[in-house]
Image (cartoon, rainbow, N blue to C red; front, side):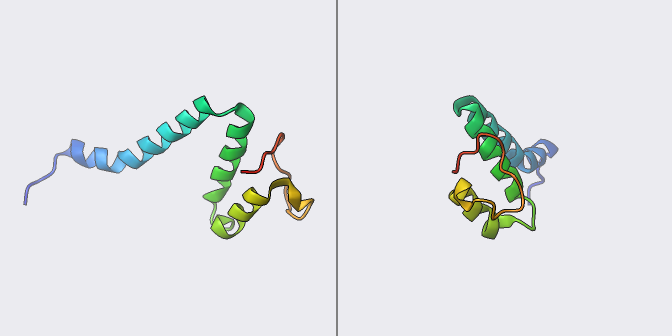
Length: 81
């Protein structure tokens, strides 16, 4: 079996992070700021375990039609996804 170089190992470990950062940078450049901040809010909340897919996705789709049924305030200029 061939031994892999440290650079190859580092690239394999870092490539998902690099792709994610590039994706967020592209969204920042291409989307209007209010939409980017709303999307960023939902992307950040999605990674916290108590929220996850079962709650974040329906809240993001329903948007402001929930009328006080969520225990937090939406960001200013909220636009449902």
